[in-house]
Length: 63
Image (tube, rainbow, N blue to C red; front, top):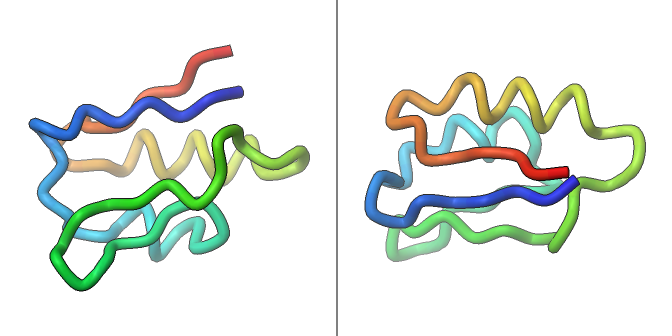
């Protein structure tokens, strides 16, 4: 499962980082950084929650 980020919509609020810090990070410039290319096995539910919690709908998942 791959995470897709719409950089135009992401404002770096960091909800995703707070929910799944092993996958998402907001850097010093307020930009969201993916720490992995694909969701690690066993973290699918957390990734789905992070995607659903994004207030700007900047995240999506692809199989």
